[in-house]
Length: 412
Image 1 (cartoon, rainbow, N blue to C red):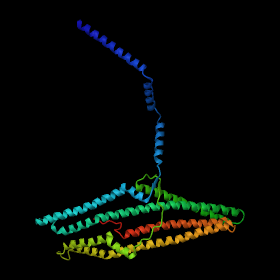
Image 2 (spheres, helix red, strand yellow):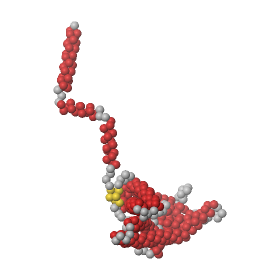
Image 3 (cartoon, one colour):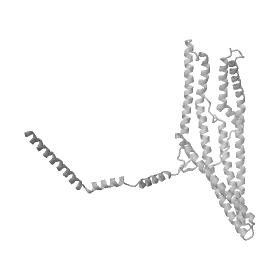
Image 4 (spheres, rainbow, N blue to C red):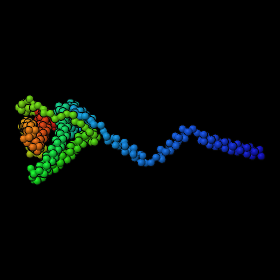
């Protein structure tokens, strides 16, 4: 009985306690500060915000990301931009690979020397290969830096061509647009002359075709420019939509002072192809020495002898090949130079003609259509000269590179 009384009392106490806690919680919620309620309301509102708002923010962010600030870029700056590119990373890895090859030949040669001292023989790895490995080692060591220089030459030549080709295309677009404006103006003049009976319908039609052709040329030039810009940006690691302002203009470079004979001599001394041909003969001779004792009718002897003869023929022809290559690049450079000089005279004559006809126009001696025709001739001369100047500068660079190690690395 006493136990039942105690349990009954505890139950009542627990019920009273729970009721009190519930009332206290309700009172706290009803008297919570306004700021707390506002925060809760704001959180709920944010959770229930329409999806359209999120989409609007995303659209604004995307649009802001596309609007990139223009980049001013010189050719030297473009070279620096390539320092962190995948292309430069590849060149560095290729140099490491050349280093590894040279070290590998050296280690194998050292191993053979040790085996030779103890008069040991391992199947497929005997001491007769010692000189062959030493030759490979020496050639690889001598080519590591030259190979790297050749790869860098190719990289810089390619970047220079991309940079100035893009710059020239920008100039071409401006000149083609200028020519279109002149032709439209001449078409309008011809139409006015037709209306007063001083021009025929065929003249109007011919001029209209000129305008349509110029419009087509302009669209093609703009399309080409857009593709070149995207390709250039991608090559340098920029966003393809990035606006890049090329700050270097295309200026005529000076002709190299070295004579053709000096250039050929330097090429024969420096070119990797010449060193590779000499090395191949040395390697083939060592290989053939291993099979001298074989019967001359055996396949191994014949193969080794054939390899040696081919290497000797290649070495014999290589000086002529290199000289022809240098001469070819020299001729291309001089042809381009002469084209530029002729273009200068043509451009000067066109400018003088425009000045002369403008004075005659002011005196009433010629019509406006005569002036416009001369303006078109000047525009055409500018277009031709711009292309000739680019071709000449690239030809000079190609000629200079032909007298050094070149742009083709040796296989190690």
